[in-house]
Image (cartoon, rainbow over all chains, first blue to last red):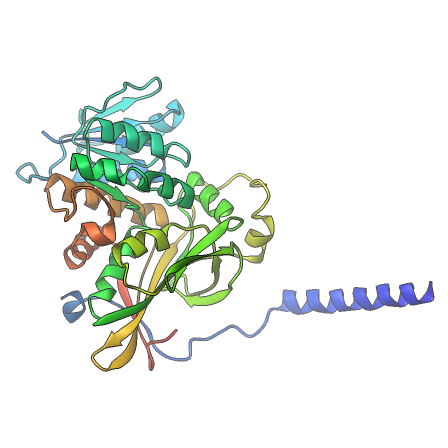
Length: 45
Length: 343
């Protein structure tokens, strides 16, 4: 019984930490290089 | 006197009508004199008429609701109806020898329609498959990108967003169905919702996780580019989308989705080097699909299509001219440029 209680407690703590991290969000992914530009001129030949 | 029948007065069909009524100049062979709008829902027809009500469309729009006549009194039929109804519509138009522009994006229905290819070829009737955002514009982008390579090894299509409610339902189900990827010389079946890949779409959509889904793009692209060894398609989805995909749609869809995007990545050889080309477009999917479908109708009326039978837009149109024409309707194709051109 004690073991089950500990396992449930561990799972609860894990879930709480995961939820907190998820809610806080991570570092947004920034583009490392490059970008989009319209197709024009030589691109349309 | 060109007449166009538009089946489905939803987010796409209504906009196709608006494009055709607004843009046709009287002297052009592609000018549309009358548009016949057909839908089973009288409320939708009323809404479409309200949208089309204007000087440009005065007396040029007819509406039809069930029961529909057997034959189409039209020069082109645009099929923009929900899934499950497109095959019957294409059959009906084919039997009357009327060219068809189909803007469907469901895999199963596209494959069903493809089975009518022999009949379309024998009759010499153009049937354009996937004349929408993806498939549609994505196929044209792929064809354009492929023209820059000496040898194409891979084509990867990704799309984000959905148009009207019918489109949203197809997307919802696609994530829980098997996807078909062309690899080597066989079709690989993989579960929808698997194969996560971060794809960077044109702004404002930006980066999104994309997954395998039951999408028709590989089928259409393989027909257009049988020599390409690997063709895949993915769609953007959230965790909730993937979790709820096997269930019925739990909440009513929006009238129309927000800004979506398509992204086409082509890998191959240019000269002696391996290279990658990434093209994309960001737009509301229903708006983009309508622009593509309306442009396709004009190409049909002007007899500019390359194939008198059934094919996708990648085979039917000359990509540069087509991209220029849809550009006039506000769809701006973009190219990704980076240090290594890899996103």
